Image 1 (cartoon, chains in turn yellow, brown):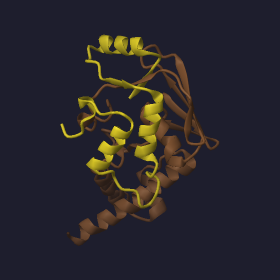
Image 2 (cartoon, one colour):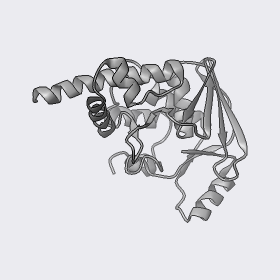
Image 3 (cartoon, one colour):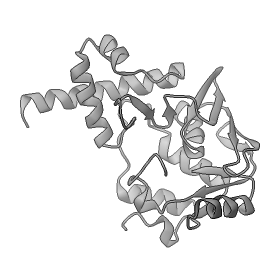
Length: 72
Length: 154
């Protein structure tokens, strides 16, 4: 996951690599994703999120399109 | 479960706790020889347990030598995603993980990262649990259900 100055720079990056465009989200959404994903990672009783928990996290940030579908 | 497999599971748990605690406290991800010394276990056992942790997607091993590449969000080697927090400098393997370091250590943080296209330096800042300084957009190249197909690229 890379940070870009704006959408135009994303387009250029994809074009140079002949890659299809993925999805862009705001740094604020990324922070909320990172916070939900990693907040407990250092704790001894950490465990992986379940699929349902991860789906709820993505949904809470507004990431609900097919791109964010974890079930393939 | 065999006694050997059970022992490896317990060791993997101890290693997970040690590695992440060390990475958070020191900004340095310990490698197999360090872990072996700290936990008093053979390096062979430690490496076997690290492979178990990697298979469980708890951390990521470098492809060739099998060292820890990232106890994500903590990257073991310097990267473009630098995090200044708690008086130390950490690295993440991507912008998600760089922000994840602030979350994992529960600290204010200033994140420096280049634009993926042109390389211009950009800055994000987390303070009191909020993102208070922000610029740019974050691009996910890979759909969510394929993230772990090639996590280095994702």
